Image 1 (cartoon, one colour):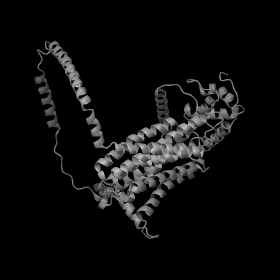
Image 2 (cartoon, one colour):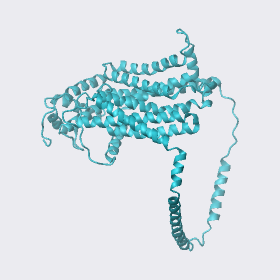
Image 3 (cartoon, rainbow, N blue to C red):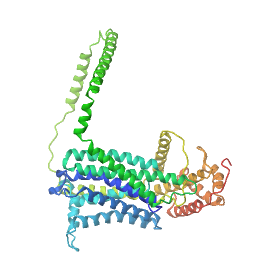
Image 4 (cartoon, rainbow, N blue to C red):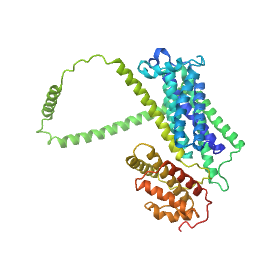
Length: 497
């Protein structure tokens, strides 16, 4: 998807830079927690700008590789092996080049030191181990970002969430280490600039797709330069205003309005006194009303008896704990190694599942169209998300956690995309309409593909209603059938036909 058009590429580049800027303050904080690192190997010497550039380029490279893998014709087995190999090899290659760059070409001592840092993680974190797991985390973020929708709404949500995170991380960094105030300010400015650029590009992309005779693929360089200039001026003016309104100037401005603050303070005090008078009258009335009911009740004695009963019960349950000897060192070593391998396996497994779902999703090669949606204040999105969660839970219950589950999700995605395209062509599916009843309307949306539409519908009904899994070969045939149907030219049909 990153290679779709120039605007999409620029949005991906800006989003990757935003993520790098958000991660940088938290990484700098982590590097300065000296007790967390073994032997004082904290990564204190890494400047903020090279750190952001390193993470930014890493995310972009991973996004490009994931997109190329999704477009490849690799078999399922080779695709899985490629994903696992990429996650592990990039981590080890980063450790070799960035941490042990001075070692000899044929030296394998760095592998032994890395393995020692993984197994004996309880003694402190080592740079090689951190880089290994951080590379896996970047793969995880890249796999999640590669399948996201680049709509104006989704990019705007990412920007707003990133603002909160950059303020949190940068604020803690500046308060905890005053020498990093300039770095925190620079990271915030970089994030805001890239965020404004990404939001503007996403908005222009939606406008271009909705315009007549435009698919949104073209982005003139002069328009791009104008947009970059506006963003730069906006960020520059914000930094200038932030520098002008120093604490001393803010105090002078506030002192100028001291009479106003005094008047507002007196008014606020009068309001508080009035509220207190009303609350006091209400409390007096409630106490007078409850006094006859509480006259013959001894709550203190009741609470004392209850507390005494619970105290006796706890004393009866107390048993002396016998001191145990020191644990077996070999067993602890095996447990630590198993835990570290388990974390690595979970990380690689999550990346694989995300990329597998992304691979199963059809590519948006044809021109997309924008359509108006009813105003629901997020209610429709919540309902769609709830239905999706229920559907995934049902699939997990039927097929378990494995290849059959991924294949079933892929079949449902194929049918859902087919219904979406049919809706855009004027043949929507009713909320409670069965798939076999909807088949004639699909045939109107995609004329000449009755047999192919029947194959996809039958596979969807078999997976959704019959709880029968599909094989890998059958899924590949369904994808080929879907691609042939999707490329059907749109015809003018009666939307109520």
